[in-house]
Length: 115
Length: 112
Image 1 (tube, rainbow over the protein chains, first blue to last red):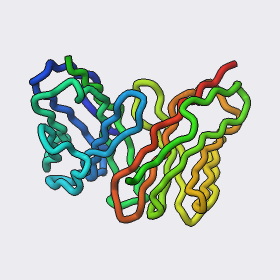
Image 2: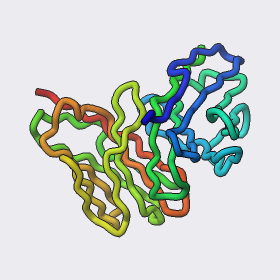
Image 3: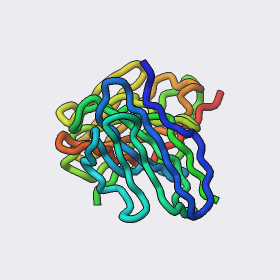
Image 4: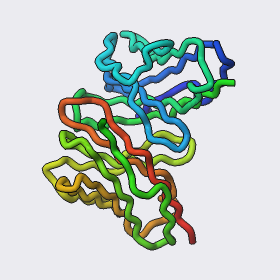
């Protein structure tokens, strides 16, 4: 069974460019979560999505960040007009069911570097 | 606000010794706790979890202890091996929420 897949693994962007991060959940999982990790820190929740719906975006910055999980295809985390402070590792997780007590399986992450 | 924090940022142990990693949490409503292991350049890997109706749970070489009175969580690793070297995070959740709240992490270094 393939785990959670993320691509690209490394992404370099210049200030002002757009970054698109992709996440394919595990087979049979319809719940996707995005987390951000700054160096030497823990992961911070950003957004929780189900197919075609954003369930909880309480951790998303108000501007420049958006996420989607279309009916077909991977979940996309989009960062417009990137700034150096966006440099971080972005992790996607998926689960089979919703609610607590459901194990979230993490992907390998995308490391975004903004020059 | 809600937070999950760790007492020790770095823990160095000798191969074969037991390791204890601690975590404090502040949200009394949390009732599900998970320990993750993160190796360099990789995503967090599930180690063990515990619900608030338990105070101890054992896995293979690992034990998690939960003290709800003082809001404290610990991970014990028996006979620590070089492959255990990583950053360990505790995370909390509750039944009616989906997001995990992570602590800042403890780096475990195993030396021969």
